[in-house]
Amino acid sequence: MSYRELPDFDRPTAESVRRTRRTSIWIIPLVILQQSTLIFRHDGDKFSQLVGAICWTVLTIAELWWLLGLPFKWMSERDQAILNDEWSRSASGDAARWGIATAALSGCAMMIARIWVRLDAGIAIYALVNSALIVAVARFWWLDRDESDEDE
Amino acid sequence: MNPTKMSERLANRLKERRTELGLTQGQLADMCLVSRKTVNTVENGVFVPSTLLALKLADALQVSVEQLFWIDR
Image (tube, rainbow over the protein chains, first blue to last red):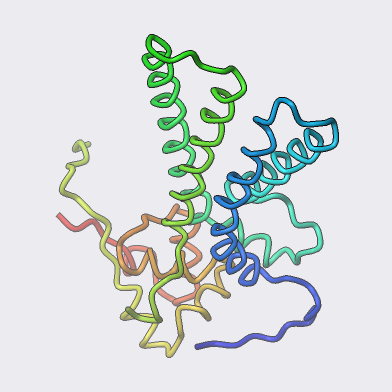
């Protein structure tokens, strides 16, 4: 194991962001479940609809962070370079392809399903967007999972 | 120019050279400004690096790119 000096010890490093990214995936299914109960409660008041919208926005930002790597201006150039290195970009690209494929398959499945089932537009959008994003995030998490021990 | 065969893969002696210099994957990653995951995947042949990264790795390990990477047929 190697160590390096942390001149800005109070700032998150590339390593800490990657670690958080790996562990935070477990929160996303919980947020999706919670937001689905809020979004599809059509009789809900304005406040609960607002909470639902905020939940979805937060989830979207988290997923974009996972896939695109939002610019962390507080990070050093070194940490930004490490966080968006070749492997990360390659993993993001692969994850995006899985997400696009999932969106295409979900859309096709819904078009077939609507022959027998009456689809609600809100549920259809929710299923289409979230299935694609969840698959993309899960794929990214799998590719970017904790690396094996040194020299393995 | 011969068309690339599907059986061809990029082989490397990254680990051999790195251990010769007494460097860890983390130290090499720091020198090249990439994550240890990148060094690990390149070393294990999982990820094919760009020309830029190959040059950086060769520079950090004080060898030419040709000495570090070759096509395994």
